[in-house]
Amino acid sequence: MFKYLKNDLPASIVVFFVALPLCLGIALASGAPLFSGLIAGIVGGIVVGAASGSQIGVSGPAAGLAAIVLTSIGALGGFENFLLAVVLGGIIQIGFGILKAGVIGYYFPSSVIKGMLTGIGIIIILKQIPHFFGYDPDPEGDFAFFQVDGENTFSEIFQTFNNISPGATLVAVLGLAILLLWSTVLSKKGKIFQLVQGPLVAVVVGIVFYNLTKGSDVWSISSDHLVSVPVPEDASSFLAQFSFPNFGAITNPQLWITAFTIALVASLETLLCVEATDKLDPEKRVTPTNRELLAQGTGNIISGMIGGLPITQVIVRSSANIQSGGKTKMSAIIHGFFLLISVMLIPTLLNMIPLSVLAAILFIVGFKLAKPALFKTMYNAGWKQFVPFIVTILGIIFTDLLIGIGLGLGVGIIVILIKSYQNSHFLHIEDKSNGKHRIKMTLAEEVTFFNKGAILKELDSLPRDTYLELDVRKTRYLDSDIIEILDDFAYKAKERNIDINLISERGIVENPESFIEFFKLRPKSA
Image 1 (tube, rainbow, N blue to C red):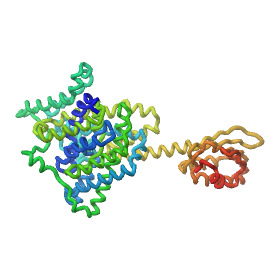
Image 2 (image 1 turned 60 degrees about the horizontal axis):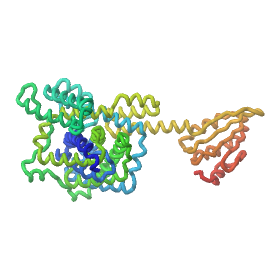
Image 3 (image 1 turned 135 degrees about the vertical axis):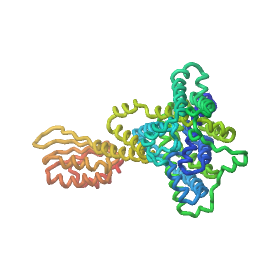
Image 4 (image 1 turned 120 degrees about the horizontal axis):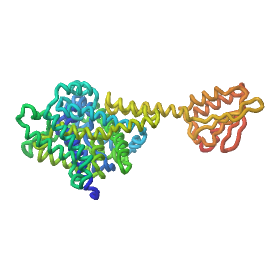
């Protein structure tokens, strides 16, 4: 694990700078104490990072749960009651892992996963534009189209151009220039530029700029454009920021509903992220999904017990980790320790970091997720790949992550149904003799009720006086609905003077009286 520390340490610094504002912003968007977001980030890094089987995934508070958290805190009568729901949600997630529900993660179409990554990349860029120009009324981590500040993604951008902060914009441009120079030129010049990451340099420049321009009427950066970590006065006030669940609320039915909702949504987001990060992993490692659910459940129990938000594996931090060269889970674990140590020892220094510099870092993350070349690749793959891909992207941009994924998945299912309709059988007209058409129909290896329409259409279109060869030698699964269709057709065939030869691994049966009886006796068929 320590073999790749030279890769994991620089990557963990980048993930730390990406995670810090997101932890705070998601807590703010969730209507929860700011420190609860940091707790979730710390536990997600250290605990989940250690327990997970993912080598490059990073966990923490998720934007997709912000709306659930916001409504649940009020509905359950307080934050301490909500924390109990987080703990119970973690226990339910462990149950999912034990029941091996992680297999669900393998059933998301590739086009939808690629659409998810691209959609998140685009939404990161769109959401960071206001922060880049120093207009920050909407908190970091609010990735929904309709924002908590009353605006939507695009109206917020239009508002930005009337509220540009010169100082925040200048330091953001400087930061972006440093990042581009580092990645395209300096990183190839020597090992020192690989060890010291561009984002760290950009953040240092941002802190220096903030301090040098204090008091300037034009170039100063106001406090609402800076990171805002809670600053404890002493050790006791630091410990006072931790909250604990109210176990007295365990009999509240609404609390159990919330716990199950958290477990379900957090598990789904995690499985989607696992599938996506595995695709991004240069080494193409496969994450054990059931172990991931156990790790996430453990993390949520601990997070809830000490006052943290719900945790999932998250694509923004995970993709930043991969793009920065992270090789093993040590990068996720170290980023968790960086969060813990920094909020304990240097919160005042963290509060000098301009959000616009962090927006520049996230711009790079977003662009690498939403590369224009991918659109051309998906288009060239055909409409059956391109349509679910585009629908997922648009759904994520104009709604939120889970709804966008659901829309893409729905379109993907429709595409599967169309493919099943088209590929249920092969129909060949071989020749004509003795006044009869000779037609051979070969059924596919698996034929389900999805194929009913296609098979009915072809059987009904057969002309009178036809000689039909029905080949089922390769068919290993034949749905009972299809068998009933064939049985009904055998009866109608007599009226239309259609002769049927059923070809199976048991030989040839001429004009079978009952397809139902035949397939009951046929081995290897369902």
